[in-house]
Length: 538
Ligand code: MEZ
Image (cartoon, rainbow, N blue to C red; front, side):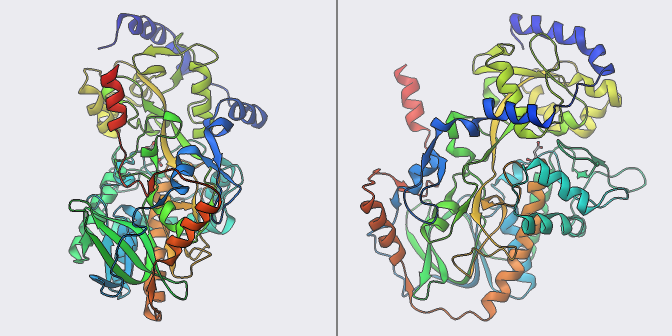
C-alpha cells in the first residue's frame, strides 16, 4: 500500500526500532518547549488571526474564519419570527445532541424539569462520538484530584480558570461512577478492576477507556438513557439564534428545520448551549478529526446574545491525524497509540520528540520536522512523520493492538495497511477548540444569568491546551451540572415578553464599524462546494 519511496523510509524505521525500544527519547526543558511552540505552533501564526471589532471581546484576536462569522449578520435578521406563538415550550432547552447536551438533559429530567433537546443532525452526531482514547479521572490509589489538577494546569500553560478546573478534577471520579452505573463498558482486567493508562502530560495512569472507541461507547449509553427517559429530541433542527426576554434573560431559541427551512420558535425558561466544537471551520486550512456539524454555532449565537468568549484564539491540533492514505486525511489516530508505546519517527527512523509530550508541543515538533527540518515523508496530501505502531506489540505482546485499539487496526486494514507490522503516517489535525464561551463555575454565562454553556463550547476549563481525556470528562462533569442548575433556575424563572432586538442592535454595531461581509452566521454546516468547484477547474 505504501509507495516505493515510502517503503525505503519504512526500512529505516525498522532498522532503528530495536535501538529506540531500548532508549527512551529525552524530555524537553520548559524553555525548549516554549521556543518550539512560538516558532511552530499554528496559534502563533499572527497572519492567521484578525481582530474582533464588535461585541464583548472587541479588540481581541480570533482565527480569521471565526472573526468572519462574528462579523456576519444573523441568518434571520429581518425575517418574520412569530415570538408570540411558540411551537415549543419547555423549562430547559438544550441546544446540541452530543455528550454534554445528553448529560445535561438526563440530569435536568432527573430533577423534574421539562426538557427538549434540539440538534442539527441526529442525537450523537457529535465530537463525543469521535473521541477514541479515553476519559481521565483520578480514582485509583496513588493518584488524586490534586495531582490531576497539577497535570492539567501545567499542560494548559497555567491559563485554566482555577474554579473550572477544580470542578473538573474533583467531580471526575463521580463522573466515571455515573457512567459505570449507566452501563458504559469500560476496559477492565480479569478481576474487574478498571484498566488505566497514561496520556500526554499525565503523571499518573488515569485514562479510562473503552478500547479505542471510548466516546462512541459513552455516547451510545447516554443516547440510550435519553431515549429510555423519553426526553424529546428534535433532530435535523438547528438553533440559529437565542431568543431573549425584555429583561435580558435567555428565553429560548429560534430553530430552523434543516430539511424545509421552516423557522420554529422555542420558548424556554433556561437555555443550555452544548453545541460542541469548530473543526469544520478548517482554521488555517487544516484537515479535521471533527464531525460534520462542528461549526462553532454556539459561540456565534451566545456572542450575539451578549455572552463573552474566552481563549477564542487558541486551538488544539491533535498531533496524530492521518495524512495517508488520502481517503482518511485528518482522521484521528488516537493518542492511546502513543500511550501504548508507539514513537513518532522521522523519515530517517529517528525519534525526534517524546511521544507523550503534551499535544501542542508534539504537534509543533511534527510541524518542525516536516517543515524546516525537511525530515518528513512526502505523501500526495502533504508531508507526515511515522507513528511506529509495530512497537506496541513488541512492548506489550502479540494481540495487544487487536485488543486495545481495534478501531485503528480496522481503519487502516481498509487500506491494506496492517498497523501491527507497518508504521503509519501522521500530521497534526484540527481537533479541539480550547476557547469558547465564558462561564462561571456554576455553568452560567456572566452576561445572561439563565444561559448556561457545557462541553466544548466552553472556554477556560483547560486553559490554552487540553490534555487527552479531559474533554470526555468535561462534557460529563459540566453537562451534568448544567442540567441540574438549569432545572433549578427554570423552577423559579418568570419570563417577560420575548424579543430578538439584540439582533438588530448587533447589526447596528456591525454597520457602525463599517463591516459588511455579505455572509450570515452561524454556519450550521461546512460548505465544501467551493473547494470542489476549484478542484474541477484545475
Ligand atoms: O481527549 C481526546 O481528545 C481524545 C481522547 C483523543 C484521542 O487521542 O483519542
